Image 1 (cartoon, rainbow, N blue to C red):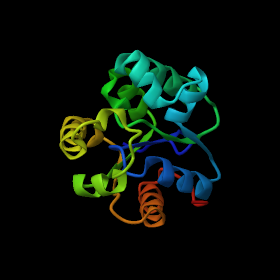
Image 2: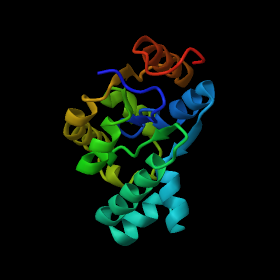
Image 3: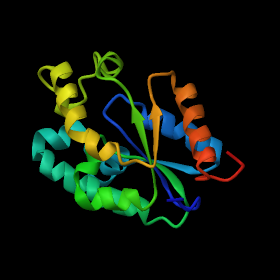
Image 4: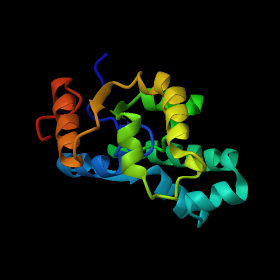
Length: 178
């Protein structure tokens, strides 16, 4: 199904896949605004994501996340949006994302683990990060797999961004400017 090139482009993937870094590069290349859902949540709540998890729990964070997704998708100007790793677990967010252009940055668990090593700001990876990454990746993959575009995210960010732009052009999901 062709996707309207005026729609938002949403990035999904497990923590460490490069959604924020690659998303910002793609937004710049397309001349679009870049929106990071976690940053929207932090601005709206005045708290960091780890603080929200610690103080209010995952369910409260997911409610804030859903509200931020609704705000981002409500913008009439097409943007590039970085979703949180678990955002697609919400059925409504998943359905909304599929109405736009959804890009999965697919990376292996070892790649994700090496990128996230030493980063203690990931509440869902507390304890045994490698085991948690395997668990999260397996649980989330069925929805990630339904993205319109799937890109190998094992390269450096500029290479991944180039692959995303090439895939979007090949599928006529963006105009020639890309």
